[in-house]
Length: 448
Ligand SMILES: [Zn+2]
Image (cartoon, rainbow, N blue to C red):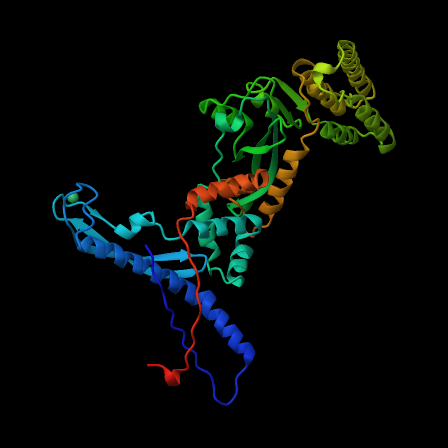
């Protein structure tokens, strides 16, 4: 279909004097807030007229029975919000004279859902904006940018209703090569219950492929690690042999993933940091803690050869295994040392951590795969999530937090993937061409 639109723009200025600045602002305002929305409405209206003209000319038959003739059968008005303004459009309905089926030709052509009140491009703009800042600041920014004026409650409702946060962990996403999985949790200030702020709890899991590509595996609010394990079981999620989980010592975390991975690596950065907190809690002095922390960091850092695993001589592999086993024995001694000093919290912490201190070495020895020793990457995501969740004036519901977290995680993991998903959703397949020709201007004195 092709159409041409001539736009009529009237201007009126004082004969005495007027401000050039005002002219610029008024023209900009007319285009930003009125003209483009009017233009959209006009184009849709014209397309609808062409569709109906074809129907009445008998060139289009009933899509249901492919036989009956169609006749007008009322319609409905729909207020539509877009990123360039909002307008009301009348959708006209037609009815088949034979089978009685009705349909709305324009709605069908533009694939607008029956109760849809906003465009997908606007939904994308709003969810992206509010996931970067707070709802209040987000809607203020959209209004300032001349995009749309929206109550922040509406923006919030849109986020609660969207499904763009959904994360699919299909076998296609997982692939067939062993993964590194990183999981972490953070707290956030939840919405008040009986006037008291509730502490919310948010979790995120990411996967890293052998090529280093990061992809989201899920975000949850108010869900325990054990429940996440159950959820994955229900979805029949399987990870390739040789996959590893890298995480901190949060209770229940590593256990929840034990069914899915072959190795687990306690984040070494955490082990070093937490030793400090545990010993400090046990009453140890900083001068005593620091050297032990440093010695621990050195002991944990077993260097793996940089070359291809296959090319590493067996003797070198044996030496690395021996070094790991020696260090594990040293850790047992270290635990007794801490116990002897009366640092019981630190002793039980290290005793717990030593079991998964060298997951990365075991994985390399068994599968020839190099892994991260710290869960830094997922922690960066969590910090970002926590920062944004803090930005809101009122507290978050679990559902709201999980939605926004999903959006942030997806965008963080892969901006390209996020854009592609939206392109698919918006069906941007180059089926529309718009070209702008010359504007013509005529003085009112000569018009008509
Ligand atoms: Zn029919």
